[in-house]
Amino acid sequence: MDRLRRVIAATLAGTAVVPRVSLAQKSGVLYRIGIIGLSATPDIEGAAPRTAQVAAFVRAMSELGYVYGKHYVTVARGVAGNRLPLHELAAELVRQKPDVIVATGAAIAPLKEATTTIPIVMTAALDPMAMRLVPNLARPGGNVTGLSLQSVEATAKRLDLLKELLPGPAPVGVIWNQASAHNLRSAQAAARERGWPLVPFEIDEARGWDSAFHSAASARVSSVLVLAAQVLFPRSKAVADLAASLRLPAIYELRPYVEAGGLMCYGPDIVDIWRRAAGYVDKILEGASPGELPIEQPTRFEFVLNMPVARHLGLKIPQRLLLRADEVIQ
Image (tube, rainbow, N blue to C red):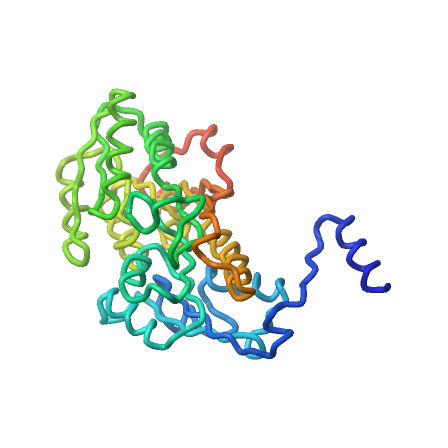
């Protein structure tokens, strides 16, 4: 009776989280959850990961009633600083036979090649259908589900923000790779509609990314739209530093670039996406088939500005942009 009253009170409050009794708590099973993130392995492993995204996942698991070390542990593999190619990293994690794998978008295709049986929860897939990861978002089938970045829809918005900041006739440079080709097409379509010139600069999957930025600077573009997140995200600080040194105003997809010294970003709240991934893991551990769990799109987007970088670049941010920003880093 007391428990019933507590549940009713929490429901009426509307904000309280009531951990439910999970299968892990009932059975005493110690689940092994694989994690592949773009940060270094030490930053994403254990009960207190240093990376904000994975820390949000661990907190959300706690809110669902899972205690780290009692109900589950993580088996982590980080991309940054790892000498193994991503497909070998994915295969190595699969050999550890985790019960479920939570992974950043860049790792989904290699993971899918490595296993057709271990459930995989995506945390940042650019476009799961275009990348042929799933045949359908509502009913993905197979062993892959999770959350997409929906970044194609946000690409035009990033372009608009760049031109609002720097409205002159000079072209906008676009840093892209094959994995973000659909984003490039979206940017080109938006630019044609608005009458704005674009100059694409393709980068290699592993090398030569810095030469693309140098080429953009030599081409005298007004600014840079950075799309190749899967290649560049592990190098976010180096990318931001290079753009600043070349005096290239740049907009990125994700907040960590701005925290590392980038000018601005507009895109999904990646921390929120990792938090929501815990709900997928919970359902799968309770027996749900990943193929039956619909793939969700982001519900929270954020526009972040870095004022010290703007001052370094000699830019005056219009008041209307400052008022629209979710956060202004001072």
